[in-house]
Length: 417
Image (cartoon, helix red, strand yellow):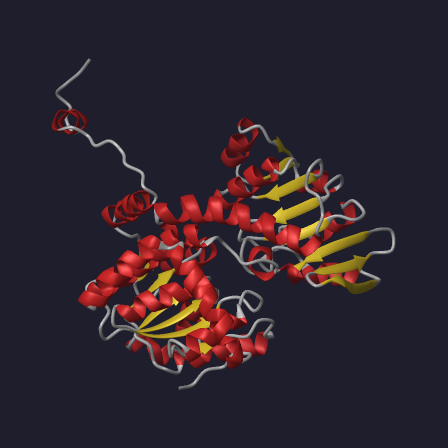
C-alpha cells in the first residue's frame, strides 16, 4: 500500500485519539453502522483533501464502512496530526499522504498522489483537489462524477466557477448545511481559535483588546468566546448588514486601521486575501498578536510584513516576532489556521454534525451520479434536519412536535385572525 507519512510507529497514539474522538461523534457512528449494513458507497473511489485529524479519521472509517475506497491527503500543511495519519495507515489500511509541516512542493505532490489513484469522487476542504482536476489533471474530468466541499472559502471558489461556466463536475456545498455552518463555524471555530491562541502565546485574554475581522458565522463565534474570556471585542466588517448586526450585538465596530492601533490581538476570519495588510502593519500597536482562523494563509499579508521587518525570529513554537524597528508584531502559526496549527481544531462533538453531513452528502451525490448538472448543490433540507434530530437524540433531548391542527394552520392561507 502506498502512503507518505512521518512515522508509522506513532500509530498506537493515533488509534487512541481516533477512538476518543469517535466516542464524541454519536451521529456519525449511527451513520457508519447503517453504511456497514447497506454499503451505499460501493464502487466509490474517494480522494479526500481534508485536515488530517482524529475527527476526519472517523469520517474516513464511516466512508469505508459504506463500501468506498478512500485516499486521504492534508488540506493544510500545518493541520496534520502525524499520529492519526500513522494509525489510519497501519490499523485501518487507508492510504494517507500527509506530514505536519510539509512545504508547498510536498503539499502539491500529495494532492497529486491521491489523484493518481484515479478517483471517481472528491472531497475537499478549500477546493484544492477540485481545482487540480479542472487545471492540471483534466484527464480525471472523464471519471470524477461528483464532489463535496467543506468550507466557506471553497464554496466561494466553486460558485465563481459555476458563474463563469467553468464547472465541469457537479458539487455539493457541505458548508451550506445548516448543521454545518450554524454550529461548526460558530461554536467550533469560536472555541478552537481561542484554544489555539492561548496555547501558542500563553497570554491572558481578560481585559485585552481583541479585534475580529469578519462577522460571518466564524466571526460571531469567535467574538462570543473572546468576550466570554473577558476581552474587549471590536468587529471590523465590509458588509454594512453584518456590521450593523455586530453593533446591535453590543460590539464596538470600526475600521481595522483604527482598531489595530490599540489592539492586543487581531484575528482574521473572512476567507479573503490580505485582510491585514501593509497599511495595517504601519498603524499597528507595538506587540500586537496577529492570527488567521479563516482559511488559506493569505488573510495576513506575510510577504509585506517580512519586507517591512528588520529581523524575524521564532520566540515560541508557533510565534514569530517581526521587528519593524519602532515596533514588534507577533504572527501566530505562520499565518495559517491557528486553531488547527497550534491546537487540535474543532471539538469532536461539533465535527460530528459536519462529518455526518459529509457522509450523507457523499451518499446522496453517489446515488445521483450521472443525473446532476454541473452546478453547486445543497444537501436536501430533510437530511439536514435528520442530522439535527439524531444529534438531539444522542444528547438525550426531546422536543415538541406540531399537531395536525398546527401543521394545517401553517400551510393554509384561508384561516385569518
